[in-house]
Amino acid sequence: MNDRDPLAALLELIETDRAARIDAIEAEARATARALVAQGRRAARERVHDALVPERRRLRERLAALDARLATATRLAAQRRLRARIDAAWRVLPAALQARWAGPVSRAAWTALVREAAVEALGKGPWRVSHAAGWPQREREDFARAVVASGAGPVAFDECATIEAGLVVRAGGSVVDASASGLLADRGAIDARLADALGLGESPA
Image 1 (cartoon, one colour):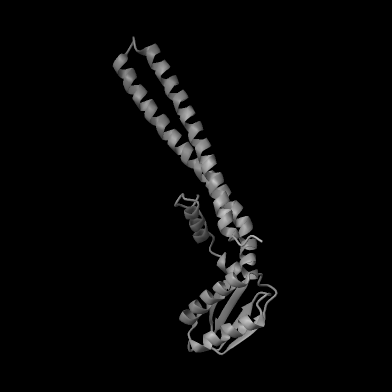
Image 2 (cartoon, helix red, strand yellow; image 1 turned 180 degrees about the vertical axis):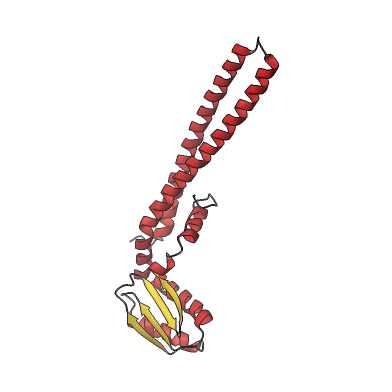
């Protein structure tokens, strides 16, 4: 059985595909630029005998405009490719989170982080923890003991059919939503993190 983090494997696959596509875009852009420059130079030679200096000036301006258009086209193409890669990642993120919840080691790390965040955000209880299926009784008991040891609690649990993975902690009127849907709620922030993981450093438009 392959214990490799599925999300890491996905991001590696996306990065490999992105690099290949960007190389292809850059090669096409260079070919286009060479063709455009050659076309401009041919036009300049045809008119040089009439007005050499003005035509050179117009040629420089034209080449500058072509460079700007090429840069814009290249950037937009890269953004389209990035958007496609991020959309592909979004299609598998829910399943990746469910896989993490299903694995004892990754689930333990998940619940420990949630507990720490909830202790800081919610303070003392009582706490009510709604969780996805697949969280064993022993792990819930360990979670509750750790909460009480931190000075919060007591903790009551209920399995919630609408939570596909993760858990939601409530105390008073406050909530720490670490369910899969809660973790994926901020699309813009996740887009930015995916863009960083793909090595482009910015979210697509």
